[in-house]
Structure formats: C-alpha cells, structure tokens
Image (tube, rainbow, N blue to C red):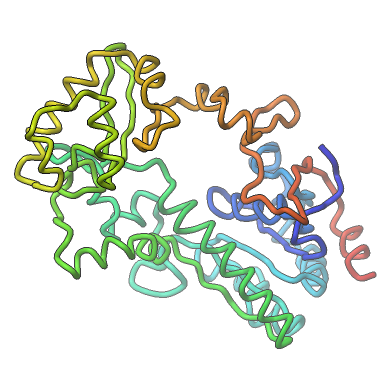
Length: 361
C-alpha cells in the first residue's frame, strides 16, 4: 500500500462533506482512482473513526457552525474541481455553502448533491432510506417470492447503484465539461431517479408487454426454471442462469434433465412444474459436488457464497479482488485501468489551513 495517488483521476481535487452510505462510497471511488479527496468531518463526528469508509482521502475536522471555519471551507472550495454533499435540501444553503455562493467564487466547480428524493418535489424534505427510495420506483415490488413480501436487496439498488454510482458518473461528466467550457454546474443526484434508471430494461420489457408485475413470473425474477437459485443436499445454494439455448442444453446434460417436458424451455405454463423437478435434482448432491460438475462450464453457474466464503474463492483470489488494509480485508478498487492503475491509500489526517495553502500553490 502506498500513499501516492496513481489512478486516472490524479490531480483532480474533490471536497467531500462527510455523511453515510452513498456519499462516502462515491468519495472512496474517487480516492481509489487517484483524486485528491479531502473529507470534511464535523468535530467529534461519529464518522471520523470509520477508516474503511474513508480510505484514500485525508480527513479534516471542521466546525460548520463557526464563521471562520466556513470561510476556510470556502477558500478550500476556491481551488477544488468538485464537492459532494449528502445533506437534505437547504442545509448547505443555511451553512452559507450553497451553490450560488460557491459557484460565484469558483465558476468551474462541480457541485455534486446526493439525496434520496432529489432537490425538489413533494418528498424532497422527507427523511428516508434506501428501501423507501426504491419502493416508489417499481424495483422493490419486482424482487422477492411470489407468495411473500418484497425482498430488500440490501441497500445496493438505492444507495450504491442508483445513488453513489450515478453521482460518480455525473460529477465526472460535469468535470470534463467544466474543463472544456470553464463552467461548473450542480449535479442533482437522487437515489429514486437512479433506481428508476437502473430499471430501464424492465420498463422497456413492460412497454413491450414482455413483463408481468407479479413476482416470480418472469425470466429474470426467479420465475423461470433456468434462471434462479436452488438448494443442495447440504442446505447450501447454487445459482444458474442458463438462458441461451446452448447453455440450457448443457444444463440439461450435466444435470441429467432428460424428461421431454424440459424441451419447452420458454413455455411459462410449465415453469412451476419444471422448477420443482430441477429443485429435486439439485437436492441430490452437495454444493461442492455440483461445483465439481458445473463450475467453469457454459451452464452459467455459480455457488451462492457468504462474504467469508467469497473472500476465499479461487477466482477472486486470483484476480486479487479483495485486499487487506490495516489488517482489514476489503474490496479492491474497481474498475481496473491498464495505464493508470488505481491503488488503495490509507486514511490521512490534515488541518484545513494546511490543505488550503497546499491547494493554492
């Protein structure tokens, strides 16, 4: 591990106002890719000690209720390429750090805003979490068993997929534009917007009348016998995604699915029957036994692993998908760059005045 930035964003300066969830994740990606990220933590903040979520950037303690501290932050932003914040609408304005103030001082700045509901709309000022943001998008209703409740997909769809990743894309696009035009702008990233965007393919299927709104009734939601998870004899699970006919044929060969009923792969009226038959077959062997038969083939197969097991999987170990930092195993930077590889840098601490002076040079 090195403290020197090596990624494609080396030289880009980003100020992060500390928060939870998507903001720190986005800032971490910027840091992994080489940006100089300064994280502003409130004095005594509970986030300061979270080294995992602050990797790759320097942490500065500030008192955002102090006028001198606010002036110091404004001076820091004068030399920044972008800032990211995840407060409710209006908070930054009340602090004297709103877009009008900051962009007047630094017209090239990209002002990245991360919220659940967006900067305007009937719900803009309401509290919420990932599960609430994705519940109004159609995403949550589509996930889970047919005869049960919608299943919360951790907080991957709203916070990280529809939130952090869209913030990263938006800020980078705006930085590119600012360098070309000299004009910064506000990037309004709402998790509900991002989650809807992630659902684009399914809304297209719906428009084409190729998608039923009842859970487990479609080929990608667990309804199809050839796309889903199955329990093994040792109480573990495996996944199959044998959509294409050649992959489905290989699944039939390796699993011994000789019943002619399996010929009608896309006959949805037979899916419940075929799922039951495949489930019975997978319960005849352990997960390891199925791994030996199917893993690495074109069946489109994978064992369902816990996080502890994933760390030890041979493929992920070979790719060094996990790294150890300060004794903590954690995901390595992604994606990977051939000419300007990302690297994991430790958390550092700094004083606001020192960073302001450094960035002014």
